[in-house]
Length: 268
Length: 286
Image 1 (cartoon, rainbow over the protein chains, first blue to last red):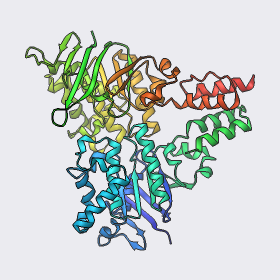
Image 2 (cartoon, helix red, strand yellow; image 1 turned 180 degrees about the vertical axis):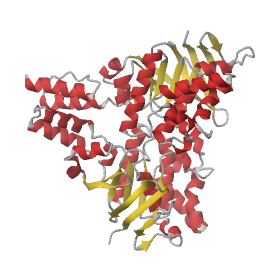
Image 3 (cartoon, chains in turn yellow, brown; image 1 turned 90 degrees about the vertical axis):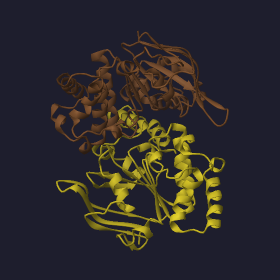
Image 4 (cartoon, rainbow over the protein chains, first blue to last red; image 1 turned 30 degrees about the horizontal axis):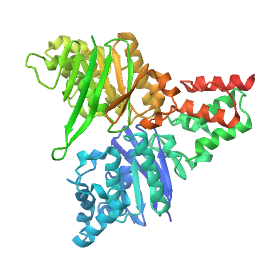
């Protein structure tokens, strides 16, 4: 059985404008998947449904063998954390220390254990020197790392990154992606919600969402072979592959050049 | 006229007696006509602080910012109408869509002009014009802004600033959070507004592809200093831009890698993917 099993979920704010439609998706434990879609495709709504921030009108979500419902939602939120796009929307503490503690306090973790964990996870995300700093003194990338420390401190199984890098500058973005890779290597399940293909290519498996349902899914190599899939879903291919495809259509692409463009586009 | 920075420095108060120097001795001139400028640099380099000086939202610690002939210095002057400066220089914050609050699009766009004492009917006309400028039809006037898509909200909030008819429009990371299609739409919109009205547009961005394809002047800030002021072409011909934490546009990187690997001699300075493709095709076919 998969770690996350989503069966035919539907969601609409207005009956005439469905946001999620018969969406089914399975995610295995330890997998790194990217959920790709253009603005308004329903991908962020899906993320909110998985952690029970909104309830599907019908359909079921099973997580680690438990069916998501108002009675299990708090149990499930101990397993899956989420990092949002705007770091300011999720910093709840007065200081970095408070912010990392917040989730553990809600879980009733004993004080001594909590202090120990705060130190350990702050160190792990490279924020130990900042424990007494206020959010205003931190950069966006640093706030994201504090959010991750808070999630790790609660010993969760999976983290959803909902366009978490889109407000970061290129350096901070690369740092966060490298860090996510480390977390994945340590066994965490990673779900990245994004419309940035470059970012999605870090994942093992891509799921393309269109009109509130799964449009295509597969490994990156499988999907990239059908460029039209991305165009139909309102997405763009990496620049190297766009160039490769255009040259191919003009019969101006040598095998070596094609190989080079693919290899350099897929290297992460 | 326009904006002149004369040896401008700005310090934020820090811990104890320490100060953080966000801008260091900046001198530069921005014309109020026909410029499309990118303001770039890593987070914390001073971009937003510089932008906020351009419409007197904050005041220099030392030096002078002259905005359309009005000198702004550390000392506030009661004779200066700072509000009128803010009407001439429109500043759109990052995620302006979070600042929509009225029940109709029309009311939201009219809010700015009315705030600057424009009569109701005139404000209504300005709102309509501004809405059309951002590529939305009159039908949107009666819509509730909260029911619009993210990209539409962004455009409505930009229309709110345009309705004040500023001479210079400054936008802080206008494309962040938008998908590729939304990005393109917005950038083409800025390009056409710039061409049709001759207003100077300044965008703060991290996206070097957009800088290269759309703008005609780049200001690079690093640790509060203005390190570069020139054309994007000149900037990307340099080999040392990583010291300012900048990337090259994707077209340049891809073409450069091809030259390195296959010992070609392609002209790597192509602003668009189409241009890059035809450069390679020409070389292959000859």
